[in-house]
Image (cartoon, rainbow, N blue to C red; front, side, top):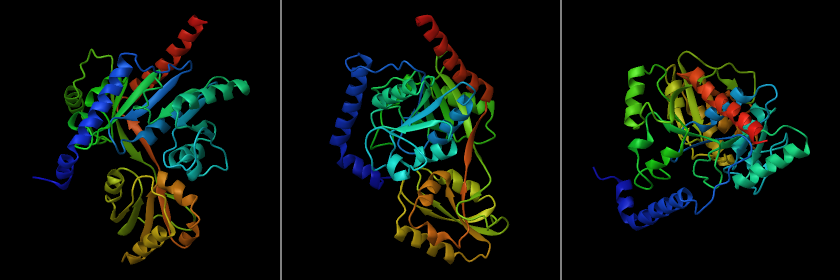
Length: 365
């Protein structure tokens, strides 16, 4: 079947070829050391993917923050701050907004106030600023998590984690625009750890082995493969505690501005009838958007109804100058966490990297 996307791909085939060649040459230059990567002097963990869209970076980053936030550990998150209206290096503080640092870094700062959250489009420069800051405050050098850094080749993290979605594995995809991959599938070889995300909660060992084989990862490979799934927490009121979340025979309006809201929609549909207003990823909600949301909510026929959004989108609603429009409406967000099928093995892989890095530093000194 000929699709509209296929027709566009044919029309833009020359640009596609140049894009593919550009990606291949760039990666070749890094592989041949013609272009140099910075090897950080402090422990860094990169988190990213090969494809456009959401593979679950935020909840996996949160998992790593919880795992690494232990006594005597300083944890920092460095992001480019996608969607912000500022430039350069910025540290999140209590006055930070989504427009200043981006919605994801703001969410992390508010959720984990004891870690350092910074944004900088130049990750190498941002990392240097974090090191300088730790020296000036006499704090230990932090463990730095590099958000969405897989294609940022100028900085070479000590440990690289590649995420790929269960229902959209990179091995089955193609480079843009014929597919959604930012680079060729062979780029997966740079990963130390590959995580298959958003798996069904009951995924058999046989199915996991089948995916390992499909990804062409042998048991002797240096790459480690793990599987994770999403665990949804109870809904939390966004603005007012005067409303209880509707349960039986309810109608929900899901409002989302993330790359892939489908898993959340399926989760809500288990117990409710769900209407969906889907906005672009990182969408900034205008007054017209808010008025549209309210109209759609009021059009729901059930008496037992509410608006639901994601935790990431909630950051933009909280900072919105139009939040007062929702004062008399039950509005909730759904926090999520990831769980690993092989949690102890995954935790050990991360903690072993950190301890081995510390031991190497002692030997070098």
